[in-house]
Image 1: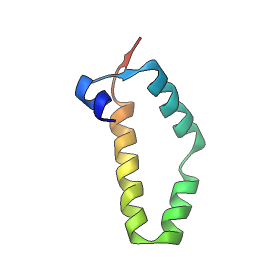
Image 2: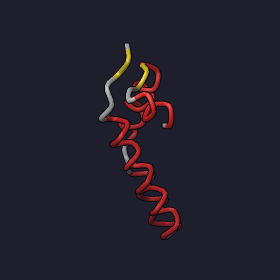
Image 3: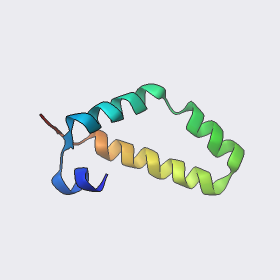
Length: 61
């Protein structure tokens, strides 16, 4: 995350990782946050926010 935000771009490997993560969906994250309560909901919200930031970056080819 830090290197992508610092450089302002994703490399191709990280783009693929992000694509796979998005294809997995959020159901498991939401289920875990519902079962485990508030601390986990906060972490899930942060993870989703980071995912949005990363998905907006251009990809270095």
